[in-house]
Image (cartoon, rainbow, N blue to C red; front, side, top):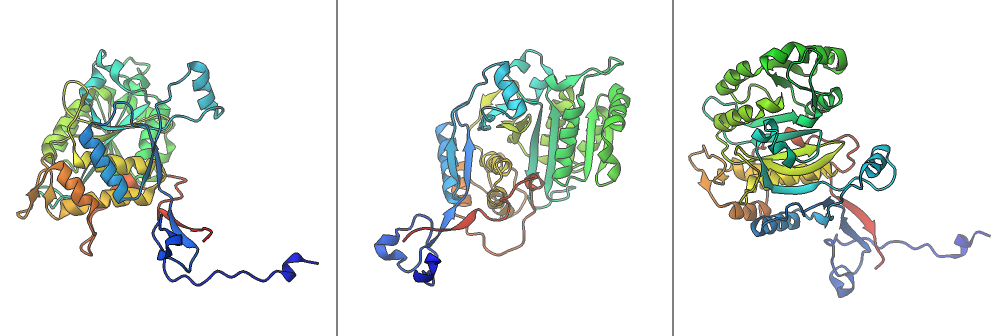
Length: 388
């Protein structure tokens, strides 16, 4: 006999409401329903290299609490030599360490062309920084500025057969182009020294067949031509792949034409995200004072690469809505006549407490396009049954 035939059916009582995560059911605040909302936003980051200054730590805590993101700090894992690297490459043994999150650490693009400064660069295959500013339209500008600036790591470049300037290996070049395409970038420029244009064209035609699909316009541009076109408009292209020796020039021009004086969020990538930092024109790496724009955007990028697409977009929107309303920080220019400059700490507090009232939509950030396999791009919350 089926034992279920003699057991009365247990029905869940009709819920009278949904309690927030962590509500005390026994205290009577939610007496009739055993259902509760349980947050699923968990982000694992390495915050130890270098440790966050006090002002950055306080601002980061405020953002995490406001967006209900549970941070799971992880100690930096050091590789155990070639055997450990081989285990990671074959998928065996210990998983790769979580990305280092240190947007307070600034790297100079000039270090990519200095053999002595390269020793201080993170171990990676390529790097990318983002210049995103959804400010009201500027004189001669198209409004929202959204530019991706990628470069191969100098160690990932090889000289071509003719002995011209070093060019990125095929796998690295493919990864950078694929990243621009996956973000929905439409106009990509590969900026190289003039004498390396033919070699780059041959490398592309020989190896990257996906470019023939016509979903992205690609140009191979000599550095001299790129300078003149970017001076006329920073929005000439929405994605740039710049050779290491040209990166500092392009970064300086973009900073000048955009009016963005502060640093940009910077990602170092290998097989995945390795480090989150910031990029700033200067001579050497340094720990920067709190920058609200960099912190919000860097945390959004880390969340996106961690599979938390919904939280990433909410973070970016919290910054963009305040920026669009005229509230800004010293490192970001203000063009609206009703603009108001506040401190970076005050901006973080406003972004964390913003109610997102109905209004005109703010521009989306292409950098937060969903990654393949990202299963949490729509909502960070799941319904879970718990015993009353």
